[in-house]
Length: 121
Image 1 (cartoon, helix red, strand yellow):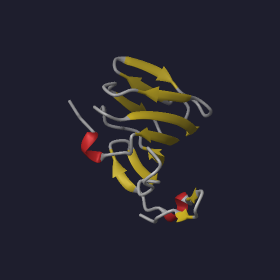
Image 2 (cartoon, helix red, strand yellow):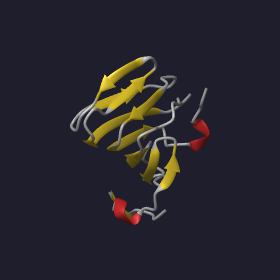
Image 3 (cartoon, helix red, strand yellow):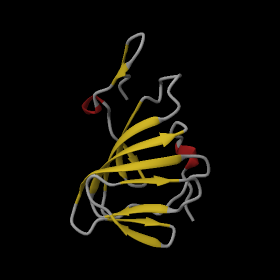
């Protein structure tokens, strides 16, 4: 993973310079993990058709939908929600969630993303 360009007062990252990593949703490019004074991480994630249902015990995730194929949905616990570009969903710890359908999202994880905090039933 490429480190963001740092200056005294701001950080810059180009997601094209970050290698994607596999995740339960597809492939994620994760930024700002190394920035000590930023409390979270920012991810650009390409979600595959069959994302795995999972939850987090500590993380709060906020999804912002950049692109969605027709019929795209989010499963939040036992509820299915239609999603489209321009929508955002805040997912608190303990909410089982998964994306249904192909989409691209921007995801803010607070606190910083930790792969050890991905839980599956």
